[in-house]
Amino acid sequence: MIHVPLNPQRISQVLGNGYWRVKVISETTSTQSEIINNFSPLQHGDLLIAEFQNNGRGRLDRKFIAPPMRAILFSAFIKPERFISEWGWLPLVIGASVAEALSRITGKEFLTKWPNDVLFGEKKVCGILCESNYGGVIVGVGINVNFDSSELPVDNADSLNLIMGKAIERDLVLAEVLTQISKNLELWNTSSAELISETYIKYSATIGTEVKVELGNGKVITAKALGISEVGELLLDDGSAISIGDVTHLR
Ligand code: BTN
Image (cartoon, rainbow, N blue to C red; front, side, top):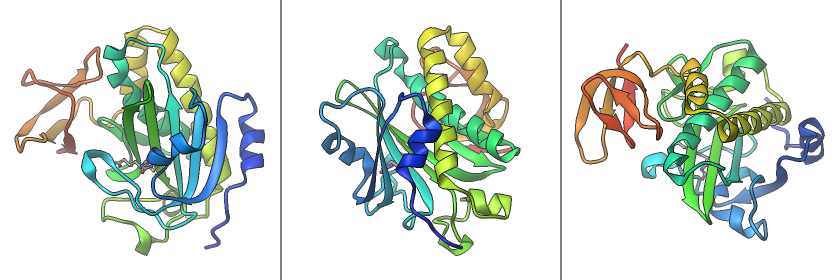
């Protein structure tokens, strides 16, 4: 497989509307930490993309590993126009946006695992890390696009090229994903909680499923996932509302 660099001009051309200010760099530690050093002052819509991260970070203190030019790796600065108590929805909005964009591009079904892993079947193709900082949220997205199967970091990971049986143009996937994120952010900023909840549930593999949730404190809950609370928690049929945890789908 030929691994070609991203083309910033083409990305901006396809994006068109100026919502995102895009900067592409070849290598960094983590776009999450580096975005602040690339935009001054940092504003809503600033977006740092890297071809390689030598210290990519995931949720729950995990690493996020991808060889150069295989993945789409970016961090965006988002200033939600919602009350801060509602910002727990942001990771869900981003996950649903990626699932929607990938489903549209590929014609296949991509769904989220709460809060925001994006899965094809039960395999993960995209991870999302949201960190509150600088008066907003740094939203980090990593999508596996052109991995050789031997390069996948874990057994339950997948990559778009392996799913589609052909190399995928990262520029186009990136532009579609960013366009969908900006549309859904507008929807979230201007609409009711119900409307966002409907959009999230449409692309959720978790809601309605029996799940095991590992909480940070070593506690494990097994229950059915019923829905999402007004602040973005996962609601279970044993009465619990989960804000942080690792979900496994049981069926
Ligand atoms: C997860 O799967 O736990 C979240 C992974 C988030 C990875 C992205 S890649 C771009 C940004 N920079 C990072 O260091 N992490 C996020």
